[in-house]
View (cartoon, rainbow, N blue to C red):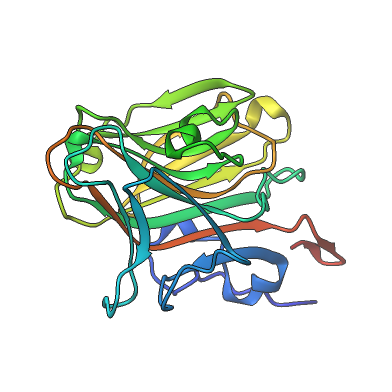
Length: 253
């Protein structure tokens, strides 16, 4: 019988959002991770950039641990940039109890004057704002005019917004990193599907409606909310993972 270690990915009790991402099971889970530690964004094999003409998406030179900036044009409202995976690798697993994971660590330069979406979406093309029009989304949304971030699940164009009760978690601060993650779990029936949201690896809230089953991809979008200076969203890393729906003789992987 195989041995599966019970400890989390980095053996820390402070990582409840990732508690089932076990090192002993990495080959049983598909994982896509980028630490933005290379000289330029790989737009050939890994990422697609959609941006407005004066905006940019670029890896920060010599940043400690690697960083990616999504930057609006200077003094331009409703302007910005986005990054999305090349392929729609991720979807809610088909086997009950299996999970889909996401985590990123980000900061924004002007939290109440920006629209920011991070998580999983379908492919979008026309402009960064088109990410918000994706028919299937799981992620976090910061809306211009508020410093409070919310969770969203959207299936076939119908959206559920999760307002987190602990505003000390969900209220963001300019130029201050926050870790955002979620775990989507396949239920025994579709009515039991759910997404648990985490902020700084603390449980923040749950959505049990409009959980998408479509294929999606890693994505991040940042749009300016006014024409005062540049608006910058910085990503430290972005990660998605999912169980492979594999079953072995000693039980599910």
